[in-house]
Length: 148
Image (cartoon, rainbow, N blue to C red):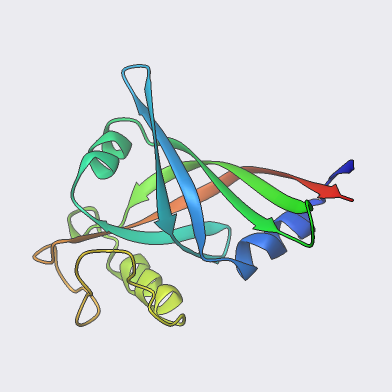
């Protein structure tokens, strides 16, 4: 098996082609990793969540890491790691346009709200929704591929 480094373009294409990854955050030196659904657009990973540990920790420390992988034939695989910064898309911080954009980007995909507990009914227009829309600014990206 040979391991090859992916170009930035190959990494971006892998992010665009996939919808599920792992999101890591940390608080007080303790890491926390969860599976999350996302959509990639304009150098951001867009996602939403209900309130919980992940959102609380990212609010406390916006530096995050995301990983997305594909498995190929046999033992082959490709993996991309993103170092980035969490940004909550809240009306309180004047992100109405960005939150609407997140809705548009995410809703282009079937069952985009899964595996969340509640499906949003309409585009969010205020903070009264239980969903927290956010994006991860991709600051660094790297990837590798295993070829048999």
